[in-house]
Image (cartoon, rainbow, N blue to C red):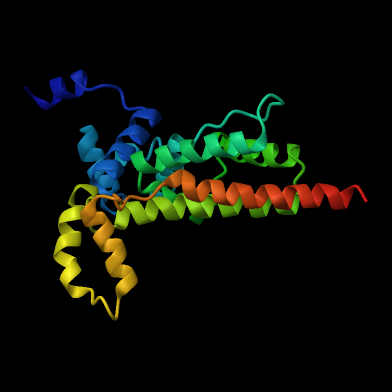
Length: 226
């Protein structure tokens, strides 16, 4: 098949096609492996043709962030703020599990795409509707997100697969002195015994944060009514 026939049979290049393919590369090979040349090769085009749709790599990455941005329903009276924040936390967690490269980009850039802005606006809206001040809403939002991102990063970077916890614990136990490291040894032993699987519970930490924020919210409402 000659080049002319190949070009004729090739799907028309679109902005959406470019972004979706870039996200696929980042998901499978990591964001650091993404280049305009690799993206063009994946699409079967020359690198220069990409610049008719995206200005540069920075614009490409911004579009990728917008593409995977979480979708959260706007505030409504039939759901309370804790339910909304719990649902939102799980939505964001699922996005970060699918696109592990996105966590850093969510917080390191000025993400002004329409989808990302609507996501942010809905988050703020539920907190303001619940009675948080703008300052407290900002604190609450960032505290929750710090936990979500941190949980995701710990899960991604942990050097042992969950299926290997018991095996590694058995190998590690002899190095934990009963007299010098009794507490670490007890926890390691619990994984060996099966009384603890060693895995972390996302909702455990989230519920503690939300319970604390609820106390702050009620205190703030009480003080503003004086």
